[in-house]
Image (tube, rainbow, N blue to C red):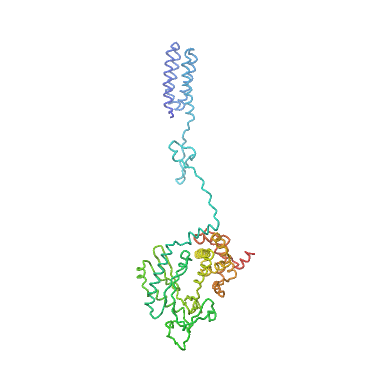
Length: 511
């Protein structure tokens, strides 16, 4: 606790008067000392007015020091013990004077030049607490976090599969039940609406029912089989027709001379003696859009069911709480007439619009399942991964399930190690196979080598897909990031093909 200069002067003056009184009583024979003491007393009493507070305090202490010296010089030997105590007081006085001199005086701060200029405040030292109450506000010691683990691509691929590919079993069961309920309602509508057309039992299927579904990327396949009379219909390969399309087949009406038109209920869809798939698609598309009471069906099933009127395909959109499902209605020619083929009414362009597209999905799924059952492999898991990544990629989405299935089937027949530990290697190998096929612009169908699945891709699409796959092969993690979230501002460069073209680029890259 510091003492103000005014109090110091008063105490010094009072102490000095008491001391001078004692000195005068003991040394009465020296009257001049009393006169001198009175003068000094007067000077100290008015020193604060004449010299100021600080100088008056210094003068008072200095006067006490001089007085002690005089008293010591004139006092006898028996008074030395009393003088020692006064010396201690003198030393304390000098210490107090030194503290007063060392005390810093606050310096007035000049006002800021403008209101926008902030007033600088002294920085507080973070290491020295200001008082006992500051101990609780100290920042606790920061423990260094462990270094991030460096995951291999195999581990990242498995993590991606768990988070974005695997569908909970509960959701799968609910989706399958919804698909079956919708198929029953649609079958009842077709039989009541088209009494003269013998449709078979609707059969829901597809990746959802075969364990190949990848995060809802593929619609449920709802086959609507046509019951054709075997003696009145036959098949002609698409390559032998005017369209010369090896993917398709033509369904021809036979025995017209014995069984004229009108003998079959399907004769209403004849065009040039052939069963036209396009006419049947148009009829069903119009019926689904305008004739079905979808609000009543939605209320009955407890979900929202509505047709997709913008698509050329026959698609139904189903929504129930957090579940979304797409059902593809596929009129099909199956059975003995199709020679165990599955022919679909599909919206094709050009001369192939009247033909029926041969579907290999059931054969491909059965083959993959048989291969995995033989060695407990991961071929089906690889296909799900490829489908999930490609469908989310802005460029690789052009690759459909049919393209990816051919690559997995080819690898599945050639490679022997299909354990889970080799899944990452097989994934990269599948990318290499796709790149090689794109370089040749040829991907042959596994069950019909005369069909080139890349035949409908233009040069620009081949360049874009090939460059995206090549970039993904150099940095596979970017494919995983591109499937869920963009890895950074330069991620779009992976989708931009080089200027010199795909084949020229790869000839330079692999040389």
